[in-house]
Image (cartoon, rainbow over all chains, first blue to last red; front, side, top):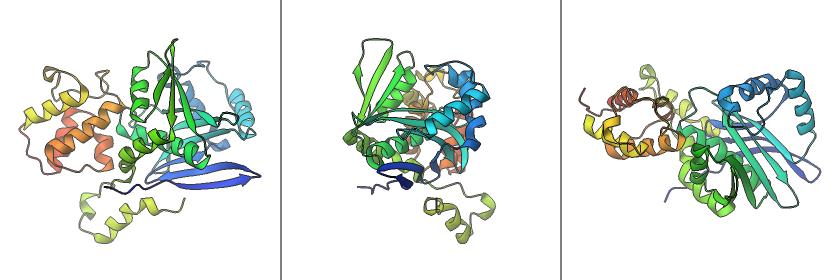
Length: 219
Length: 79
């Protein structure tokens, strides 16, 4: 039976509330959304290939993006992240916590590019769920997906979500700790695989060690 | 071995084998989504007894690319 490697967290605690700054597993990390990310995220968010799956499809201006950032930054129940692969931003995700119910809504997307439609897409979602269910101590994560987005529904099922309301055009799904744990155990090793060693250095043991040590990198 | 490659893609993507050829890429069929890609990686590793690295997984965007990657792992595939 293989060992489970849990993500590394960097957090600060503002009073009793945990603020997650970074979550990392192997070469995938979630980095708390900062002012410097705003334009990149706005361009992704306005891309028709991302926008068509969102509930709010307005084109977002810089001013509106900034106003939104100021609002969510001061809300301790909103946790917005940029997803990074090898420290390069590739997507965004968030948890919006409902403290009275001890659950959160989740949302994630990858920017158009080479990582979409690949298995790598599972990793930020796994980390986001782990952050909510373990670091923030929530009992469930919820996702609302447009029913015609069958790829997202299938994706969420693989992450352990179950459908809990099928009445309307939106598929309401819920993930609990036991189901997350099972999904995490089966998928997380994907983040810990070796990086390709360039042919020219394949015989150098010292270089191989460097390339494979990304998981131990200080966040 | 090409038949095995095509059969593996067909099984992973849930399509018939006659839809698989080297020109098949991720953006040409709706069946190729992240979940199918995850299944595809597991099926290719099992069928050809290889362990793909992260870069192989990211680069696995077509049947032709899979052929190149598997060949680089020492799998003998017919042209």
